[in-house]
Image 1 (cartoon, helix red, strand yellow):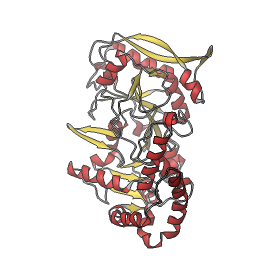
Image 2 (cartoon, helix red, strand yellow):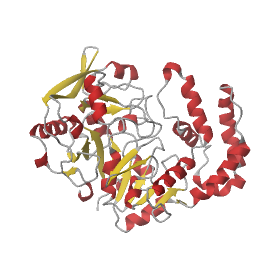
Image 3 (cartoon, helix red, strand yellow):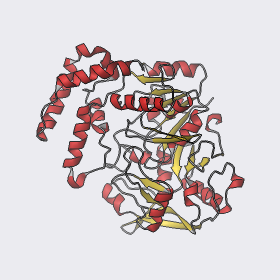
Length: 429
């Protein structure tokens, strides 16, 4: 049986939650492998809406849900999210949920530093969520992080705190902030430790057992490839690798376990926060798409920037992330438009580019080259087969496949789980 890795093929917010939820109902285990609670998934199941930032989407269906070692974990955010899910009737127990014991923790000091830096950055702001994700990853690679397993050894944590405070106290002094209150930090960790430790275990070992039993594993990515710290629109990116290859290192299963790579892609383009966006629409067309698509960030509530579908970017991300097939979402948002456009290239300094240059200033100056197609007046909302789609919508989807050089595996036509056209089953590939 094939495993499936789900990633965002744009700047995140592509509708991964619904697709992961749909796939999770057919999987035996779902694994988050990078990011933190800066991610946001909205699931609509039988009319009930669930908003999830950290816990894998499979938890709603009762599927075994695991947080891998590649995630940075805010233990207080985890507790709050689980309590909210339980309030909606979702059961979260050590039987169906686990956290890798080698996950680095996001601490209050990370959130502090995130906010201080962004406030002081002036024109250099990159639009972080302010949740401490970047500083936590910095401490991970700086070998001074406190990890989940350390919560069981807080009486022996002083040497680690020495390393952590030596770094952060110097930074805080530069912002005229007092040193870290170590006693308060340890007290806070002691209070939250029992809640987190009930779920802590070697997730790699649990996954090995699951896979050996022939189970289907679904790897759930956060954000999108264009926010990858290496391959995205740097520096306007997240602090982790969002490409499919991270599923191997971020879960503890090897590179041969990732299986079918499904890239989630909107039928248009959005991004939250600062950074280049070649096809951005700042007119009434963009405003209309944003309103119909309810384009507000799940985590921050920020209004998303909206633009036409950018085939150059998606072709690039599909190549970089080894995408096997895409899931095209929100096609219904384009219903009723007279014309629809697809970006097929960029014009920059008199040259034509079929890729996005790496330099931020060059990215910002790229002018999109559009191909225009006829729109469709009929509704695609709720369609569950090709026969339900207008002819021009099918032509639009077919043209996207040609331009991005990657086949469409799924088409999502509403937030509801079952409103999905299955072209190619990722689990059977």
